[in-house]
Image (cartoon, rainbow, N blue to C red; front, side):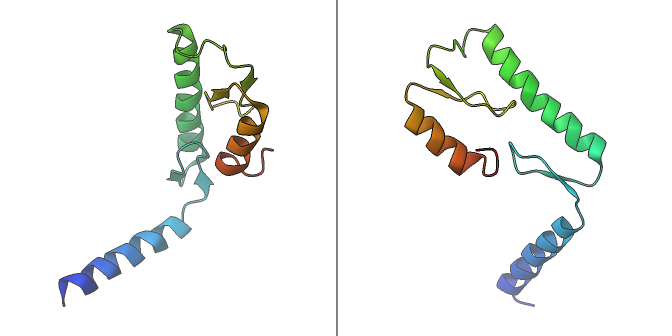
Length: 93
């Protein structure tokens, strides 16, 4: 078997395995078979946002803060925030 064929088969195999996963993490597009693992991953994202605030990295100086709980994005203009929500969090807008 040629190397390119092997690579294609491995890629298809990975795609197939993802169809068996039932829980997706929105922030990082990771897939999990167990809901507990998905919740743990989401909690990690929430803690990251809280940690950024604690360190003063997310000062809230931009008036438009992303309403998605695990997202730490803030922007000075509403139109930019709306575009961010549409592109990064479809279904949350």
